[in-house]
Image (cartoon, rainbow, N blue to C red):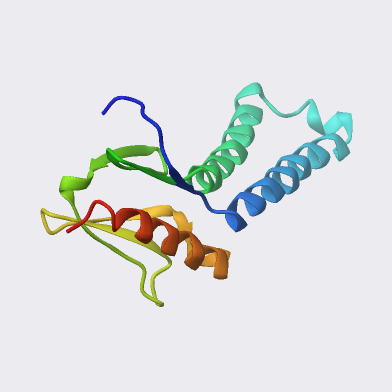
Length: 146
C-alpha cells in the first residue's frame, strides 16, 4: 500500500517514558561508571573490550526502544502497525476482528487466515488510556469490517 492518510493513530505511552528513563539511567550510568574509574584502570581496557561494553548497553536499549516505538494506524485502506523491527500493513479485507481481552497485554488483530498479530501500539501498561485507544480503533474499524 502506498503512504496514505491515517485517520487513527495509537502508540504506547508508559513504555516510551520507561525507555526514555532507561536511556538516561543505563547510558548515563555506563558513562558515569567509566569516568569514575581511575585513568590507570581505564587504560588497561582494550578497544575491543570498550566496544563490547558499549555494544551491550546499546543492545539493551535497542530492545527497549524496539517495543516502545510500536504504533497502530488505521485509515480507509486498512491497518498499519509496527511491532519491534517489523512494520506491517493489512487491508481491511484481511481483517476478521480486533481483540483486547482483560488478560491481554496488548491488542490483537485477528486475520481472515485464522492467524493473529499483536498490536504493540496499544499496551495494557497504559491503563485506562489503552482501553480508550482500543475503543477508538474498534469504532474506526467498525466502518470497514462486516
